[in-house]
Image (tube, rainbow, N blue to C red; front, side):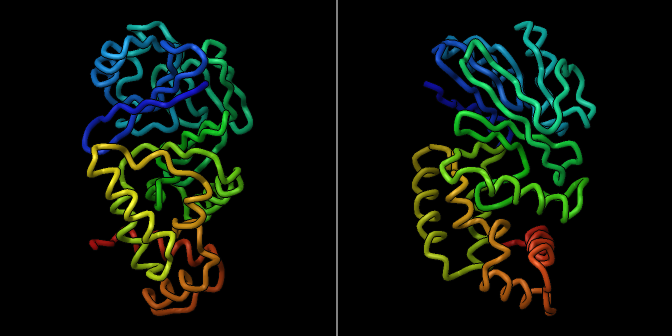
Length: 258
């Protein structure tokens, strides 16, 4: 039975360790800090068998080569980004089999945060880097609002029970923004209580689920009347399409200081 462990890095990064039917073997997702990963592997007596990389930002890749050299393991990453050390370049629809773990993942291309961003989906789990956050989404550093919206809608089509593992602990800050966008959302108020309890007890707010995100994440709720109305109120203009609403929300969040 698969399980997922977390390694904290930098201020708010999560590096994920995926464990399958072998209790002491793991795949490493987005290792920005090799030392943090090595310390966790040694402490837990785990052996890595592969690195899965979602995008090129240094806080998700900086440990790749040191880990690959130490453990002689492959690095899977996006074909459309320049990431040193990648041994398996991946595109939309590619499948990777991690036989040691008894797991397989399908690759989803998710341009928006970066142009070549990918995610790994399989066994009821989604490792989505900085595209979909719990109650939020990534900034548009390279892609367009239309690209990011399309990417998020692709993820929203996954089964509601899918566990969402993203790259950062941003949930509480994202909820503060979402409550400004949709103050009457009771699911959002419940999520706030859950997350504050988790963080207070030293636990991550992740994983989320696709179903929870569809109920609470404003970036997946551009079809909501209240979300549209408050986005229009914020920009002082009519927003004709769901993409227009999404783009307005993303600009609002970029400058939000609540």
